[in-house]
Length: 174
Image 1 (cartoon, helix red, strand yellow):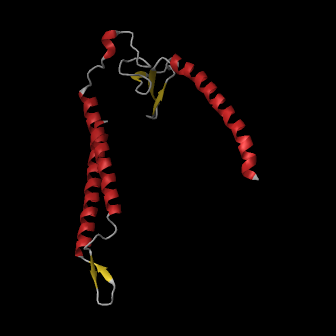
Image 2 (cartoon, helix red, strand yellow):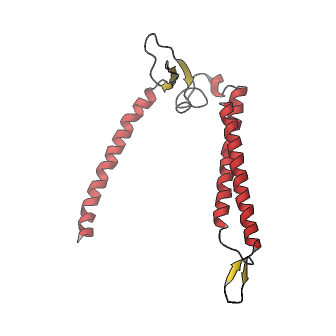
Image 3 (cartoon, rainbow, N blue to C red):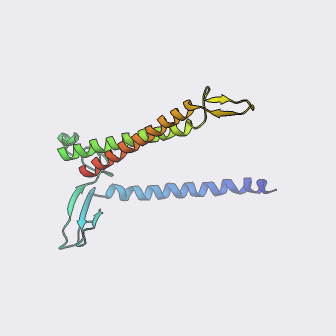
């Protein structure tokens, strides 16, 4: 009895949110396009850094930083540039290049750690030839299993060490 009732009500309920979502999306797209693409960086007296898309209050100091989320490489929001020569991004500074390289190294180290952890989890079960049969009909794990487990655990420890080193380098580059 319940499923029949929901079949009649459900189509009516699913149409209204779709129109509502489309209307909301359309209304919000204008405000995103109207944004000037500037991001301001403020430092409070206690040292806290705040980022905002609103210009500073009179008498307040703020620096304009590039908006990486809303601007394309051309420099303007949405990717269209009024200056054709500005279509290519400016060359990165040495500090930015170091930070980007450190970030890529950190992501690669984190990925390697995940793969090592997955290999350890997948290798938890004994493989062929890693059990020895006993007189009582039972079996036990042999040294091959424990050697393989040790290698997998060692790989995880080494990957974790590489992640820690990469994280330190990334933090130093920031």
